[in-house]
Image (cartoon, rainbow, N blue to C red; front, side):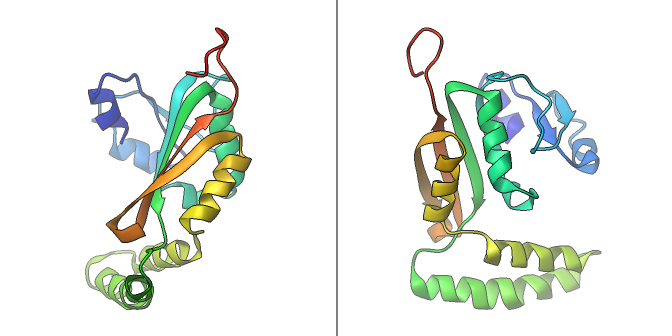
Length: 174
C-alpha cells in the first residue's frame, strides 16, 4: 500500500518488523525502516497519516500498536486499517468460517505452499480477530476519533478509518 500511496503524491515510509518483508520490497522506490509497531522509531506527530494492511492481527499487542500509531500521527491526522473482518450476512459468515477457513485454505496450502502451517495460522488469526464494531471500539480507545469502517467482500475484509484526537497547533482539527 505504501507504493500506491506514494504514487498519489504522498511522502511515505514503509515500516515492517520483518527484515524479509523489507528485502522483498527492496526494489520499491519508498524509504524503508525496520520497525516494531509497539515502539515506532519516529518522533511524536511526525506523520499526517498512518496505515496498516493485513498486519494488525500479527502484532503482539494490537491496542498498543494503535496507540503508537496515534503517537506518531499529528493531531487531526488520519488512520486507515485494512484488515480481515467478520462477514455480515450469516449464511456467508458460516460458509466463510466453516468452508473457506477450515477446509479450503488449508487444502490449498498443503497443495501449493512450502509452509502450510503459515496458512493454518492465517485461518486461526482471522477466526480469532474481532468483528468490525469491536475493532472500532479498540481504535477509539487508542486515541482515535470519528472511527468508522467500510466492509469489503461482504465484510470478510474491512477498511477502518479514524482521526487522531486533538487539534493542530493552528487551532484547526485538520
